[in-house]
Image 1 (cartoon, one colour):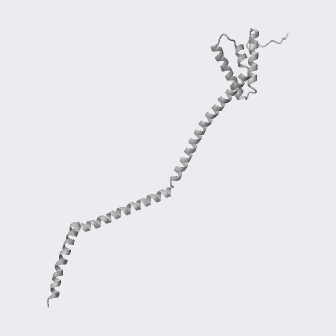
Image 2 (tube, rainbow, N blue to C red; image 1 turned 180 degrees about the horizontal axis):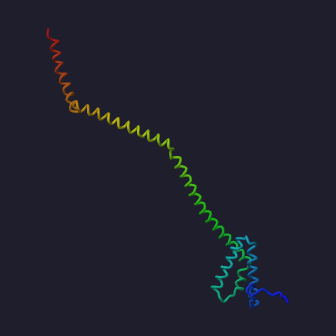
Image 3 (spheres, rainbow, N blue to C red; image 1 turned 135 degrees about the vertical axis):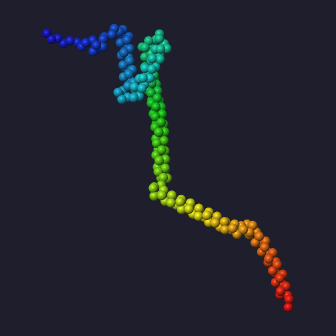
Length: 192
């Protein structure tokens, strides 16, 4: 006596007691989805259907006296369905524009960072170049120090022989001695 039994009630949805209007609502709802969404990959269709559902929820919240069927009569016109699709296209284009702008900014900063790294690495000399720069810097420093030491030595020698005062006295004495010797030389040559 093996009889095939029906699946348990938990596995299948319980039949609901519904009025002919609610059965009609479900049929219209399926028709709305089917008319808006052509395939599972139809992103714009899914987005336009979500806009339709949001509009329906707003309608039912604000106008509780009107039924969902009345909403469908208003919202399922070809012009309204086209409006949902158009709005979905605008939203997706806005999303794409924002995403591309963010991606573009990220790419721009990444490229700038790469260019900076390359520029810095070009400016950074190799070890041998650095060593050469240090040796040349050391030689230049030594040359400057020797030049300053030479000038100091010359100045010290000049100061030891009188410096500025000695030079001034020598200049003052030189014309005085030169004028004293000239008249003497003139007297010597005039006497016979």
